[in-house]
Length: 129
Image (cartoon, rainbow, N blue to C red):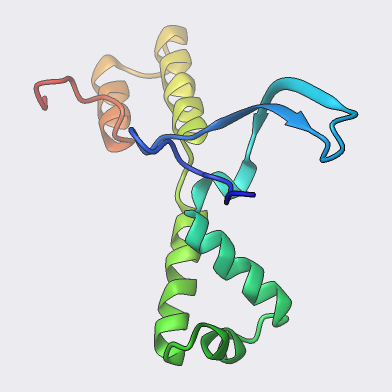
């Protein structure tokens, strides 16, 4: 079996699982499922997390299994922590909708809403303004 892709290879965006099937083929479940926190990691990072769990959190043993220096393994773990703490697209969309709801309710001025949307990276037009 191939490794599970966690990101869209073209856009880099989140992938949605739409079909699950048992190995025996007896059960098929269709719908729209999120990969959850796995979607924030590359397949290589998922493999690293698997090794880390197998070695019960011992980064030194992970480094030995990968035949890399401890500092390299530690840097990879830091990259994973950063990826997992980054806001997801759904998080950013929810924050933008909340700002728009506050604007609609009159709780925010247009300028304040625009500033918040720009800070979140979602208020820029296609020409960079």
